[in-house]
Length: 114
Length: 113
Image (cartoon, rainbow over all chains, first blue to last red; front, side, top):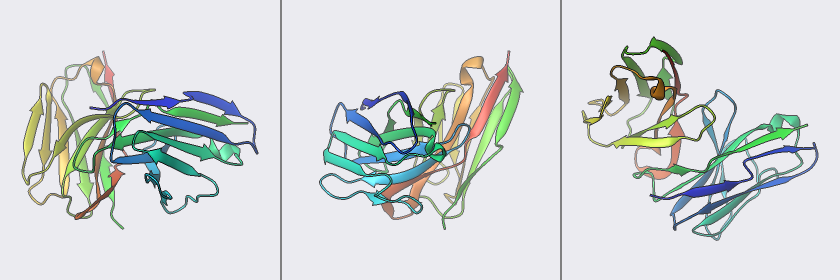
């Protein structure tokens, strides 16, 4: 199993600013993903964080808005740029060794943009 | 595109009653996973099913994968207040691709003591 530490756990930010969320895994994982979850809703995949290369974004999400880094197999960051109130949500990172194995999630970052 | 649906969206049960949530995919799945998310928490992996018709049990929880590998169910016997949360099924984006996981919309379970 793997433990993912995600921070910050929550933040209140001014519109127009940016927030970087970090995820640290206690062991190397092949795959890391970033999700967004609105209260009471399911998880929406933002992007796959690729080690040493550009992230793969899902439809509706772009690199300029959500730049992602993954410098190694245990760490990734997601930046929410030029925030607006519509970006208020819970952001989750997950990691695992592949789709045929379980995914581990960070504790989530509850973001409120005012 | 591929979709994963779950029913019901919400379920309120009296403690001790049984509960079942159903997951249906528009395409055949190579495997399906189930996760539980407690209120205010993050999703936690419960189980993975791989084989057609597979049935797995975890104490009061019974998981089943359909013969056609397009549907799955989670059944909880004699619910307890600790079962409260949202249950998500999740499957690979495509049958032969292991690069993404699609989560169903989830079933939110409330247990009345």
